[in-house]
Amino acid sequence: MHGSHGERQLQRMFGSEKRAAAFYENQMLDHLSPLMQTFIAKQEMMFVATADSQGNCDMSFRAGLPGFIHVVDTKTLIYPEYRGNGVYASLGNIYENPHIGLLFVDFFEHKIGLHVNGGASIIENEGLHMCPGVPEQVAMYLQEKEGGKAERWVLVKVDEAYIHCSKHIPLLRKIDGEVDWGTDDEKQKGGDFFKAKSYKQRCYRPTP
Image 1 (spheres, helix red, strand yellow):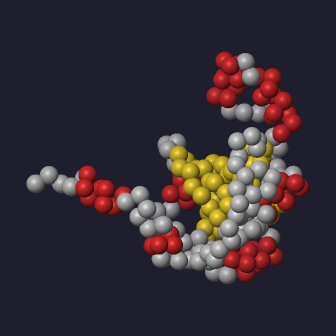
Image 2 (tube, rainbow, N blue to C red):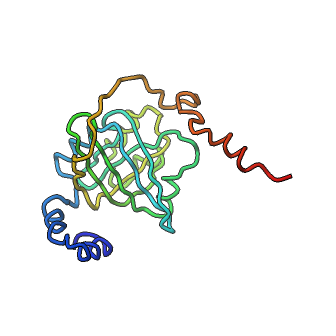
Image 3 (tube, helix red, strand yellow):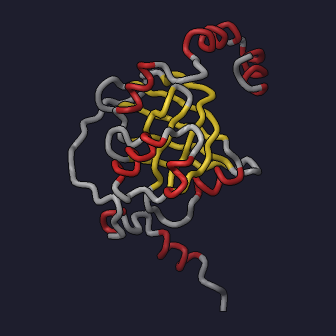
């Protein structure tokens, strides 16, 4: 049976069981179809949803060159983790709770999205070539392709894959520019755009 208990409860409450059943039957797969694989191979960004063992959620953004999310087979994806802010929010959640949701959105050509839900595991660079589910030639290709930029990897075993409709996805225009993937330059990284540091200093100043 498709869908969580909560989904089915609300479908009954709101009278959408028939529509939901049609969606499950016609649009939801437990693997990546050839067209889905081709779509993913072209993507330069994705949104990553994780939660810790208590269910506290986090949504993050990942980007890279086209194909940075690599389709290993119909049930397996792998993507690199680059140098970040050192918090490891997504990886920390995966460490506690393997459930992961990926959302790919094509803003530039087809105005369509793809959801991929499954189970994730963290793979260190040195263990990539020994990782079950990643053929050695694939591991060699990935390490060569990333050129040392990847600090580690996330392997995703696919449970669900389904469309995100185009109705409200805006059509955007891409402007090409150089990306320094490993930079620590505050300006390139956005710096303290929301002035959180000075805000905290003002608002949380200890009382004398």
